[in-house]
Length: 503
Image 1 (spheres, rainbow, N blue to C red):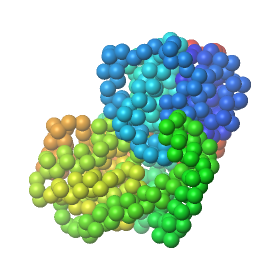
Image 2 (cartoon, one colour; image 1 turned 120 degrees about the vertical axis):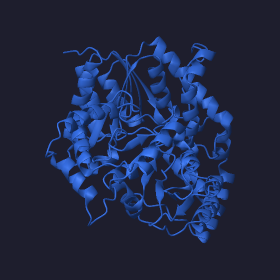
Image 3 (cartoon, helix red, strand yellow; image 1 turned 180 degrees about the horizontal axis):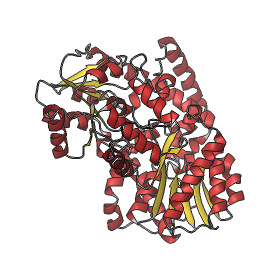
C-alpha cells in the first residue's frame, strides 16, 4: 500500500498508532509531514519514506523538487479544483504568523498553485492508495491533497472530533460523515420507540451536564483560552525601540520577505516576529474592538431573536468546515434577508477572537443590517441560548448546546451533529426559507428524548479516543487506550476500503 499520512507525529499515542498501522499493512511507500525530531521514527518503520518539514511545506517550499520534471498543470485540473482554491486562499489567513507582512492575493495563489502542481504529480505518478489524516485537513497543503484524492477517487480517512470529550469518528468524507451513519442509526432506534435509553457513563454524564439547571456546561477550552490582553503603552513603545535597533543590526527579517518564508522556521525568530507583529497590530486591534464594544447592547431576552455566536477565526471549524460560509457575514445577510422585521439577530463575537480574523469593515457591514444587535463578548451565551427562537451557526458548539435547550439549529457548514433532530443544514436560500418556516410557523424543535436517542446513535458509531492532543487531558482515557482505539478503528476502515492487510 502506498499512502500519504498527515498529523500523526505530535503525540506519543499517535506515534504508536502509526507503528501499528505499518506493522499491520504492507506499506511500501509513505509520504508524511513532521518535525525533525520524528523523522528517525518514520524512517525506522518504513524503508521508502519521504518526510517533509511542516514549516517548509506549509509555504509551498519543496526544496528537493525538480520543477522541470514535475507535471505541469492544465486547465482541466485547475477548473476542477476551483472550489478547493477558493477555500485554500481564505485558509491562508492562518499564515499571518509566518511572514512578517500579510500575503497578497498573488502570493497566496502562487503558493496554492505550487501545492496543487506538486501533489497532483505525486498522487498520480506514485499511484497513491490512501490519504490518512489525524484530523480534518486545514493546514493548506493537506486540504489540497485531500481534495485531489477526492477528485481522483482515491480513498481518504480522517479522524474527526465531536463535542463530547473523548469521542471521535473515523470518516471518509467530513462533509458527509459521520452524519449519514448517525442519521441511519437514529432512525433505527427511534422507530422502536424505546421507553428508556441506556447510555454509557461518558454519554450519560454529557447529557446530564447539558441539561443541568445548576451549572453552565462551559467547554474546557473556553476556560483555558482567554483573550490575550492588550500590552501597555509604555511596554509597547519600549519594545518597538529595542526592536528597531535589532532590525538595524540584523536585516534578515526584512530581507526574508524577498526570499523563502520557510527560512523563518527557527523558533526564536518566530517568537520574535510574533511579538513584533503583536505590538505593531496593537493599535489596530484596540480600534477594531472599540468599534465592536461601542455598538453593543444589553440584550432584551423577551424579544424574538435568532442567536448567532460567531466562530473564532481563522480555524478549522470554518475553514474548511463552513465551506463558502467561512465568511460569517453571509450567514447573517441570508437570515436578515428572509426574516420578518420583528425578529432580531443577536450576534455575539467569540470571546477569544483577535484582530487577525476580523477587520473594521466586517463589523460595519454587520451594523448596516437593521435586524442585527451586537451583544457584549462577555455576556453569558447560555442565557442567550435559553431564550432564542433558534441558533444559527456554521459548525459551532453553541448549536450543539442549543439542542439540549430544545432549540432548533440552522447549520451553515458540516459537522457531526448536522443530522441531529431539528438541525437544518443550510446551503441555499431555499434551504433557509424552509427552515425558518418550520421554526417560526410550525414551532419545530428537538425534544430531550430525541437528543438522548441521538446520543445513543453517536455511542453506537463513535470511537472512544481523542484526535487532537489538546483533548488528552479531558478524554479520560490513557495514551495506550487511545492508541489501540484509533488503530482498531482505522484497521477496520482500511480493510473495509478493500486495501489489503498483511495478515
